[in-house]
Amino acid sequence: MLRDTPSPCSAIRCAVGLGPGGLFSTALLSFLSLPQNPDNAGFRNPAWVLAHKEEREKLYLMMSGNIFIRKFLELLDRQQPPEDIIRQYMEKVLHTVFFFGRLNQRQMSPDEFLDNDTFDVLQRKFPLSFQQYSTHLPSLTPYSILLQFGSDVAGCSTREKMENFLREFNKTVENAVNNTRELGFSNYIFKAAVVAYSSYREPGKPQTEASFRLFYGASLSCKGWKEKMIMISILCLRTWHKAVAFAVYHGKDNLAIVFPNEVQCSAFYYKSGAFMEKPPCVNCKNMFQVDFQPYEGDKRKKVGWPYGNCAENECLSKVLHGVPGLQEKITSTHTPPQPNNYKAIEEEFANIIEGDVRNQLKGLLQEKNFRSDLQFFEPQ
Image (spheres, helix red, strand yellow):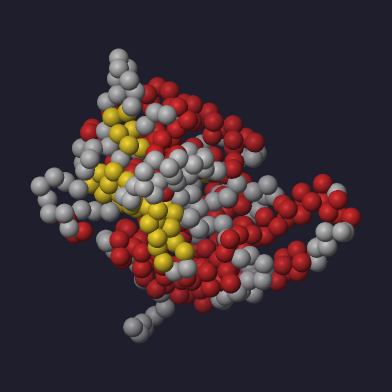
């Protein structure tokens, strides 16, 4: 479709010359100039090995952040939402990417993700993200922002539409990653390994796709154990439903929240351009008693990620927020005489869980030399 005037995103992309590759030549040459021979004396020096590992991880984060920003700008240019929507989403994307740069072992500033021209244009257009990435906390990881855009702006009302939307975005990212010399998709940081959706199938209504809403969630699109724990704590305090925060908090205690039979939850992973259904992991089965689809029996295996990492947390939180009256129908597996209704869950969150999670978050942020007054970023 022809347009008489360029869109805001198109103008930004034209001004900064956003195209595939070409932004990391200096950093890559610096990285590649390091001795790579395992027989080199450096490989026998633990301090050198650690420094080399940290530099490599910093490079992966820098490249991943740049690619996600560029591809999200291209998405906005294709979708052509109103300018206030562009601002809202770009501020969130920029802030959360810069925030993870700030948390990195080798701290990064916004200008390390962007070339000079890009930095100048985006800072002028979205100054709040540049001002608050080291003082305010995000409420979502990058891929969850993408899911939110798909549901709320791009009109992905069915699973087919959402899968097509995500597939198109994933392919643009993969193409950009493949055009780099050193990143590789396995090292690309801001991808969600799994996406899940939940639904509430109201009794008496036709059981067709159009008769119930799908609520989407993504696994944490970040790397690093402390980074994940910081984000899980943030999400429990700021974003997720209190019942989901309860389940995450009690994950290791074998306490779960119990959903009514009308709630279903399915997860799928993206591989080679296709989405494949997958059963829930052991952590999810510990935390949630819900109708998982598909469910392949209780084949419990140890998993290497923290409680709260999985996509099911976000989608089940959204169905609790999005279906009026549903939260009152859930219970916990607390045994009598301890109350297990939703009111008791809410009271425990207010009296115990919220304070414990807040203190844990403050401690984790202090380890990263990040201010611990827990201010949250709000787009303009």
